[in-house]
Amino acid sequence: MSNQYKFGDRVPSDVLCKRLLELSAAATKGPRSMEMEREFTMRIPAELDRDADLVLSAAARRIEELESCKVATLEQTTCEWTSCTPEDDYSDTWEGSCGVTWTFIEDGPKENRVNFCPRCGGGVVIPANEAVTE
Image 1 (spheres, helix red, strand yellow):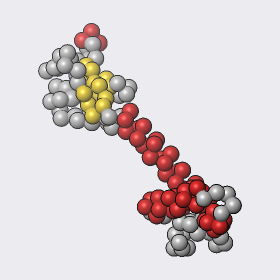
Image 2 (cartoon, rainbow, N blue to C red):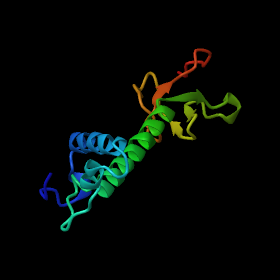
Image 3 (cartoon, rainbow, N blue to C red):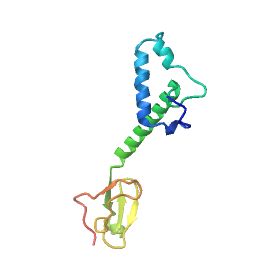
């Protein structure tokens, strides 16, 4: 390993993964093994792609970031848009399941080629029972 990385977020994920596997192998040898002592030492200056504490914390942060992105992506895959009720007299106004309200000058989201919600980024879905505004 090296001192070539100056910031933890610059260490490539494949380098972190390789190091995690090495640390895992060393940990399975037992707490008093030479390999365990060698692999879990901390150096000065710190080696961001080698020192166990730095590699483990960087990997944990990346996993948390990926999980939060995955959850956000799953939550925002679609956004159901419905036309506001006719008695409101806003037949060209639509509401999305994320809370967005959008008014069209003419027609509705389909006719205006609205494919993604401007608020949540989810794909716009119009229920089959929704009347087409004209």
